[in-house]
Length: 284
Length: 229
Ligand SMILES: Nc1ncnc2c1ncn2[C@@H]1O[C@H](COP(=O)(O)OP(=O)(O)OP(=O)(O)O)[C@@H](O)[C@H]1O
Ligand SMILES: [Mg+2]
Image 1 (spheres, rainbow over the protein chains, first blue to last red):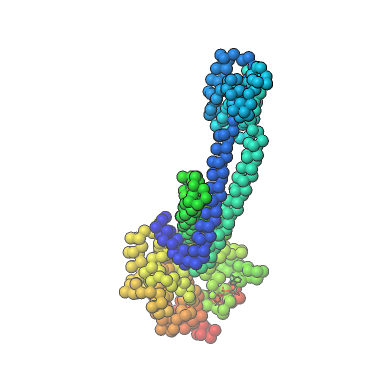
Image 2: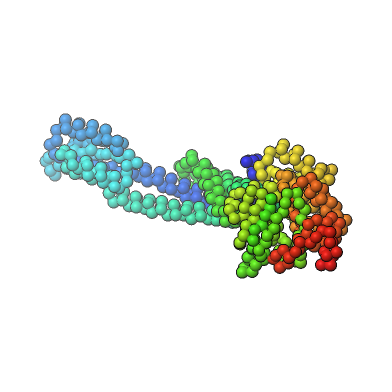
C-alpha cells in the first residue's frame, strides 16, 4: 500500500471538486463552531451552577442537650465524609448573635432562655450536589440521634437542576443534529467528487486496482475536509470567545480540550460521511 | 487459457449473448467481427469479468466466472490488458504518467514503476515522447499509450475493442503492426473490429458474430468471404 500516492490522489480529488469542497468545508466549519458554542454554553452553565451549589448550605440542627464531646465526634465524622467540603459549627450563642444581627431584635428581652439550637452548616462538594445525592445525604444525617432537623434550599436546587438538565439535553440534541448535517455535507461532496472522477475510477478498475485502493483517496478527502473544517471552526471559536470575554462575560470558561474535540469530531465525521458515500457509489 | 462453456448473457429479458462456446489458446490472435450490436463488446467484457454471465461459465487463466470473488477481480485484470476505441487515458497527465498510473494504483513503488514504464514505452515506440502532454498526441500515439498501459503487467492476453475505430488508415495499420509484434512475443490478442481490410493485411483466426452468438469461424485462407460481408 502506498500512503503517499493515496494522499496525493486525495488532494487531487479535492482540487477537482474545488467549489463544492470549499462550500462543504465552510459549512462544516460553521456547524462545528455551533457545536463548539453549545459545548461552551454547557460548560459555562455547569460552572455557574457549580458555584451556586457551592453556596447551598445544609443546616443540621442538633438536639438540645447534646454534650460537647458528642458534638466534636459528629463534627469529625462529617468532616471525614468525602462528599463534604466544609463544616462550620454554630453554637447556640453564635446562633443567637446571628439572629440578633439579622433581625435587630434581642430575643432575650422576649424570652428568657435562648431558644435556638446549635447547628452545623455543611457545604457539599459540587460533584455530589445533584438533588438526589443531596437528598440521600440529608436522609443519612437525619438518622443520627444527635440531629434534630436538617434544612436546605431544596426548591432552588431542584429548580436549577431541572433547567440545567433541559438545557443539556437540548444542546446535545442540537449537536447531534449538527453531526448529521456535517455527515450529509461530506457524504454529498464525496458523491460529487466520485461523479466528477468516474473516468479515472473506471481506469483504475480496468488496470486492476483493488477496491480498497480506489476508495481510500475519497476517504482521505473526506477526512481532509473534516480536518479543515475543524481548524477553521477552532479559529472562529477563538475569535468568538475573545469577543464574549471582552464585551459580555469576562470569566468565560474555555475547556482545554475544545480544539482537539472539534478536530476529532471533524475527522470522525469526515471519515463516516465519505465512508458511506464510497460504499454507496464505489462498490461494484 | 480462455474458455467459454455455454455462456449466455441476459439483459432486461433479452439475450445479448447466447450459448457461446469458445476457446482461445495461449499466444493466439483472434478477430471478432460482426454487425453493430452483435455482441463483440459484451464477449470481451466477459473475459476481463466486467460482466458475469447469466448462464454458463467463463474460464480465464485460473479464474472462473462462476466462483470468482469481487476482490479477486483486480488480480485477474492485471493479467488481462484491455484497449478501447476511445483510449480511456487521463487527459490531465502526460504519456509517462498515464502509463505509470496503472502501476501506482496497484501499489508499486516509484522506482519499480520507472524502469517498467520506460521499457514498455520503448516497446510501443513512444519513449522519446514520454513527457508529451495528452493533447499533443495524435490518435495513433494515444492508442500506443493505451497499449503500453495494457502491457505493463505483462498480461497473457490483450483485448482490443475496435482499437482503430478512431484512427486513419495509416495509423490503423501501424497499430495493427504493433499488435502483431506483441503477439509474436507471446501475448495472445483478441480484437473486435469493423475494419475488415485489416484482416486481409494480417490474416488470423476470425469469428463472425451475429445476434449474440458465434455464427461461423472464417478460414483465414478464404479472405474473400470476409470482403463479401
Ligand atoms: N449494459 C447493457 N444493458 C443492456 N443491453 C446492452 C448492454 N450492453 C450492450 N447491450 C446490448 O447488447 C447487444 C450487444 O451489444 P455489444 O455492445 O456487445 O455489441 P457490439 O458487437 O460490440 O456492437 P458495436 O459493433 O456497435 O460495438 C446490443 O443489442 C446492445 O444494445
Ligand atoms: Mg462494441
